[in-house]
Length: 261
Image (cartoon, rainbow, N blue to C red; front, top):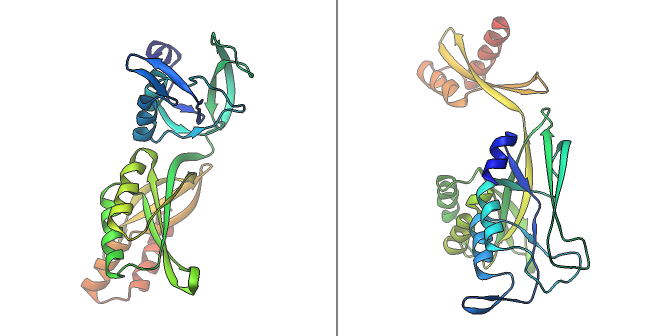
């Protein structure tokens, strides 16, 4: 497998959610339930999504070795990758199932007009927690790897005001995030789903103003500039140092940016 990836020059591996059968399998320790404990543990640690096969099958469909390979190689799990198919290959298994026992590999050329990344979105609704804890919660979630954290006011059962906690995190960090939310808040459960994030290319440029240098974040989509945002902290330092309204600093940065363009 590693030799094939090297020879083909594969830059990224994606996979569909893994279908798992039911029943039992003979092992050195006797009969084990399916999915095998080792397979489940690998999928849990690597946040690999599992699905039921199209028809009920009392056979092993995913082995620990297969799960380990995908856990080490695949960077995301989605039904169909985005791009142009260049080649297709099939491998057939020995067992007879009610459906074709095939493993299909597709070689794709990714579309370059959009950048995407697959994340886990973890949410919980809470109506009984000390509000002082929310600040701590957000800070700690960012420290342990969350990409984004936000709170939304919601009206819950019995007409109680509550807060919906939403956490966007890389798939590999989802188990740790789930554990943190379940142990550090008063919620009894969390929801989790996979979401695709589409993002624009971005760069940072330093602009010279009469008051010093200010960083500006510039984003591109399909090769065109779609947004320019002065760095808040740089503008705030100038505003406080010189006693100038923050909005005036922003306006000056934009005028300097236009002059440089």
